[in-house]
Image 1 (tube, helix red, strand yellow):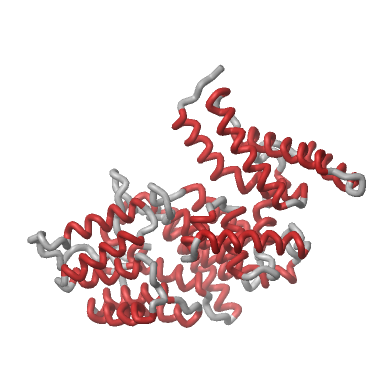
Image 2 (image 1 turned 135 degrees about the vertical axis):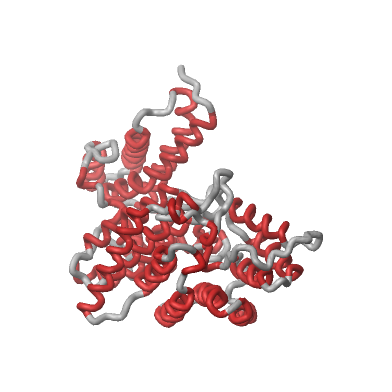
Length: 444
């Protein structure tokens, strides 16, 4: 009998959950057609792992082990639930289950199961927010609490939305498939939103001690590449190219966003020589391809292409002081026309502050505060506090940083804001008006 250390088992299960949950769930849904059964059986498999792995050891192929357990659990449940009326159908499904390959890559035909699952989640019969939330829960494996924070709603509210969405899929008989070409376009906007939220949750993980959850980031980019291939010659391919470019620009900075101690390093302070040049080059090529497609089709750029262009402004600047913030502010203004959002207005305010001075940015932020559209969003008080600090108004800045720390979603960001609090504390004699700028737009 093998006894594994608890921390090693916990780490192995966490890694397996990130890598395998969506794949196994999607495959079981494809075979059984039963959403709840698939999710329950995958949860049962992980519950079994919590019991078995500490005693019997962590399996060499955890994906195959979990698939086997989940598959067998599904077989047991279907056998016990079968009735005479459903016997033929249940027998056919059981035959498929029993012949199901048990490891990742064992059957290339199932590699796109998660993409099929995304299209199912993003069916137009579901409200847009439900599509995004359901895919983040089922495909990305986020907790209900994490999704609730992404939507700025309570966990109870999000739980109800997820229950209603699953019921709608079941009751409406929504098919589990990639739709035919004539139906793809109507679902693409929702899928792009799903992938971007998935990437953002991995890139700035909420409720996590680490800032980046790499498996989630990689999954978002992998699915974005699949989507680009699927949308070949489609008008929606331009935005898919822009989205992947945006992801790659941000991902290129992943190694420089925290220091050796795991503390946040702002964009202005990052070592640009350590940015991933291959990712930047690929992102630039994708953005150029998207722009060329837009020109050839005489179409207006979409929101992801504009956001990628904003990211490119930062990535091509040799240092922070050389960034063309006037262009960044103009691009945010364009983005606000395409997809109006108070978060976009906050980022524009920071870019305006960088190009025109802190007072100009504060005026825009004060307007957002009066509108109360970003109540509970920690980057609003953080951005305002930063501008106040640069103006030498340390007492007001200190209050803002304190409020931002209360709202910050991760421990990494709370530690960073604690440093700013210390710098602006009334007892400090150090003039902080020339400290690094850390507005919302720079922290992305």
